[in-house]
Image (tube, rainbow, N blue to C red; front, side, top):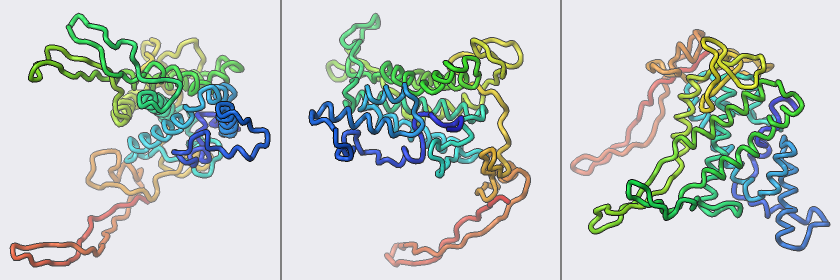
Length: 359
């Protein structure tokens, strides 16, 4: 396996497994020694699924087998992270494209590049797992956890009470640390000075901290005519779009750290203070992503649609890297309905706006 393998089991194969197929639906008859006890049979099928996911390390397989209900939430969280990554970078030279022909990783070389983009991938997928696991706990979809009732009924100095059912962020974060961090922790056992693994672990934690930071309190008032003489409050996780927006800002301010290994990651330039656990960190400057380079896993921007009037990263002189672009006016005939005061209808042609594509 290449350096990018062994991350969340995110591969072309694992992401094409139907999202609504539970672990227990594995065809047990493929193995003649499948146990008859339902609970044992479920764990047996979980073992088959966990062992078959490409790229998982031993600790991840153990977690998968010990918490068999969670593997679907992990898959959902990975998809959530990939979709958000592609949304956040949809207008940029690097658009978080994925590889459809890689059996081990949908991100290919990007996972081992050590760039700001690598940092974002690790953070957003780690956050996706926390988000999906936490939601699954609160909805009752997992046997291993439920919503957080630890503060229910407690009264605060402000006079309101904890109530409702808070999202179980604690379980989500603990699970993510066990499962998502396992590949890099395993590698550090054999190469404790590998700064790339330290970078990955740091960005995993930054993704988790993003979800925790954005937790919001919701309250419900009780009293006569909504007087709010008494209110009960609980905490909810943010939407994942909010998490993506937050991490994109962290990406833009990502801190470069030295390639030389240290016990704690520090800034490469300026006053070399340790970086905080909520910051994204990277080792190497990003390539420009302009030209096709298959050896480096770069698809280039040729043929991408750009926006000539935009002031953002999708403007043509930026996205096309100075190579120029073609402008094409697309005329498409559609049936349109127009109704006058006399209820007369008219069918005509719509002229669609022009489109620019880079060389």
